[in-house]
Image (tube, rainbow, N blue to C red; front, side):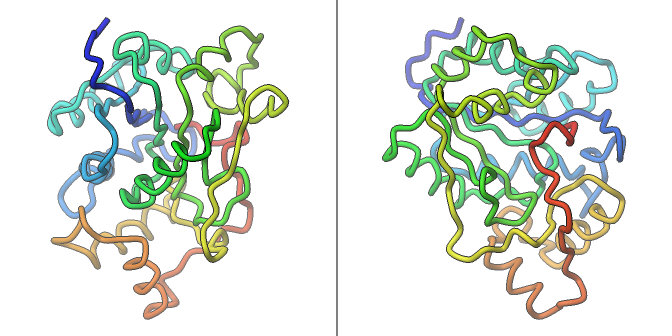
Amino acid sequence: MVNDKSIETIAVIQARTSSKRLPGKVLSLINGKPILEWQVWRVLETIGPDKIVMATSDESGDDEVEAIAQKCEITTIRGSLNNVYSRFVKTIDIYEPRTVIRITGDCPFFMPKLCEAMLEEFAKRRVDYLSNILIPTYPNGCDIEIFSVEALRMLGAFELTLDELEHVTLGMYNRKNIFKCENYFNEINDSFHRWTLDTADDLDFIAKVYKKFEGRELVFTYEDIMLLLQENPTLSRYDDSRLINKGIFNV
């Protein structure tokens, strides 16, 4: 164990290369770097986490994920390909934080300011789990989940389904009678926008947006993208399914 009591909040970036619909998507080169690397650098811009780690599988195909983490000077925790819950438990066993931020590799437009606001709200509300996905008002691909370590450990007492083991927090909001789960709302409902990385078309859209912000990859904001899409309406992608966090995406 790491007996560093200064680690109150840990951000866990969950990524792998064996996506079913778009294998290797997180390694796709955009503006000269793998898209996952840009995401890690954006997470590192966030004020709040005391530690940031990469959680990937122990499959050889994910050696490249670990290499990206090493380049960004963050630690990698490796474990079961499908039992992602066990990766998170392994992480909290090592670092003993109080709060966990879950970030998935299919969200390359990670927004530091949004995460900071949600962390502040999580502390105020005193809940087990807070996210912006229970009632979506942000674009699909702006997903952030924050939960207590106690809640994560409590899940281990239940007979979790395969989906719950793979999708980590599904077991919490499947048991709202036990866990206090709340939603973080956007001021405007932008949930019809699609910013996630799951298909070749998604990747094309993300590459075009990053190209527009070349040289500003770490500092462009939510408002910057919205303004870009207002000025270039044909660039926008819209989500007609909202297939998020329902045991469907495999990051």
